[in-house]
Figure 1 (cartoon, rainbow, N blue to C red):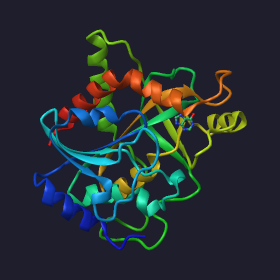
Figure 2 (cartoon, rainbow, N blue to C red; figure 1 turned 90 degrees about the vertical axis):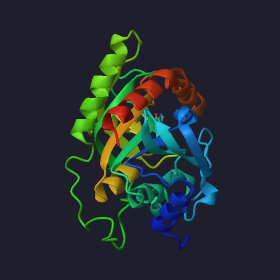
Figure 3 (cartoon, rainbow, N blue to C red; figure 1 turned 60 degrees about the vertical axis):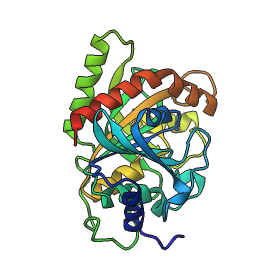
Length: 278
Ligand code: HPA
């Protein structure tokens, strides 16, 4: 494991992009296209950033993009580190803590997810209201770094209510302009992966109160909230959970649905960033 800290990473990033960053964005599987629209972009491959691991999964570019979206300075993680790739949780949340060290106040987390709720069809978006951490591990396990946050952080309102409202308002505005898409809200359940679930597991998670399942987001949300950031989570529903559609689940299908919604997803993200502002 690297001996570099998120503060070292932040210092390096500042040497390449000196403007203040208040909002950071993490782009999920198949949703990386938003990063191509950042203006005056400085792109830094993860391997150049002290302490960062490398992203290995298909559909993740593995670079940090700094620049402007909707006139707001942003740091965009194009590709994330997943627990299922074999990274330690410390590596998974290293970029999140780097954003905190850069002075970011807001974190927007996006992902691809399977739906357990028949109102959330593939191709729709879901604003995350709460989560179930079923990864079997908490990213804050171990010695607490008091400089980031307290030993026992509260998680009552991990996903900021004001941000959820902004997403709903902006989605309504996009729909009013004639775009055909639907936005729902619900509980995201994070699993370690890399297998998709069995139908029995999907039934269990549904009983537990989950609306969508995925393999990311929760570690970063916990680390961000620990460090006092306001968190927004948006899932792109790419498929129905195992056993709900009669079809088997392919990674290709997950990527294709991301591709299909990317126009509306990019527009929503940039409107939301514009509203959150500097
Ligand atoms: N399960 C877990 N993770 C996922 C899924 C799913 O059905 N779809 C996209 N990511």
